[in-house]
Image (cartoon, rainbow, N blue to C red):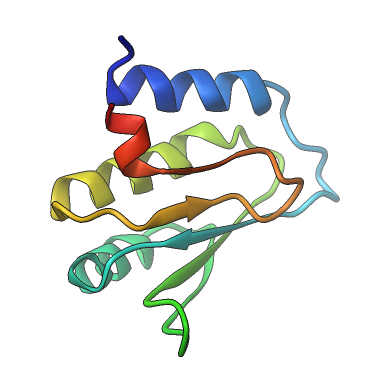
Length: 110
């Protein structure tokens, strides 16, 4: 059985093991429960690659993260870990650019 860490690292080492070219921008969408939003936002605004953090009428929180010429794993992984640590209810986490993967944190934990 995979641990949470094993699953996250496996997903992102398989799909993002090549550095991005400088002209490429990747955009990620993260959806988390309301109880996670404030602390997640406080953390995300310290990361240079975060370009937007906002509330949507239909989804509690969406976070767009833009990486240029960097490996994807570190920022995305830290966001997942923070969401896992801060709430017992985990919303869905999506990568909306390239449709690499779609899963919930609860699924990752199993």
